[in-house]
Amino acid sequence: MQISVVSFDGDMTLWNFLKVMRHSLKHTLTALQRQVPIPRALELTVDEMIAIRNQFAEEVKGKIWNLEKIRQGAFERTLEHVGHPDKDLAAHLNAIYLKHRFEDIELYPDVIPTFDVLAPHFKLGLLSNGNTYPERCGLEDRFAFVIFSQNVQVEKPDPRIFEITAQQAGCELAQLLHVGDSLENDVAGAQNVGAKAVWLNRDGVPNNTKTQPDYEVASLTEIPAILGLER
Ligand SMILES: [Mg+2]
Image (tube, rainbow, N blue to C red; front, side, top):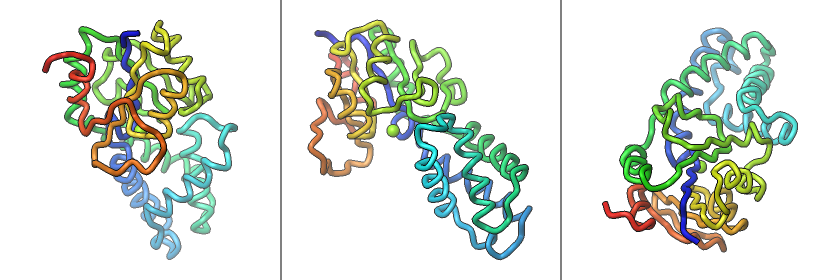
């Protein structure tokens, strides 16, 4: 069956989430240290903040889906960790974090040129376990469908989120090509339901898994050729 729909992962596929996350945490840490200049806060690092957030997210997995609420809970945890529990300050820090996290995000340079080539021929969509909204990074009106795990309460690689994707796209799973940087969430997830998958391997890392992507690319600009379009 011919591909008619291309779904894209978001974080690390269309934008560098890790970079904007660390950058936003650095701003938040500076604000925290200005408000709470005690030794334990002054010693706090961005890496510790990331570890606290991941630990908290693991604890509330399946209970809290909204990623902004999880982030706020993580800041409450962080303040407890430095010996200064303060829910109001956590809310203030969360606002600072989210402002940078949403306003300072940048697309990879291959996104728009690739979308321009694909858009006349394929239905394009976003399928993300994250919370970067297309309108925050210049992708408003670019997607025929947008699916966030925090809204449908099931996340990649669960087969159900790919079934929801095909449903919203109005295609069969065999007509769907999913593109993403995660071999587990994106590639294996899509292949498990009979969709095709492109592994975006921007840094040329070795594949040490049993998952064999249908296609592997180093840049999104290689995708039109996969789909039979000239560049
Ligand atoms: Mg990703």
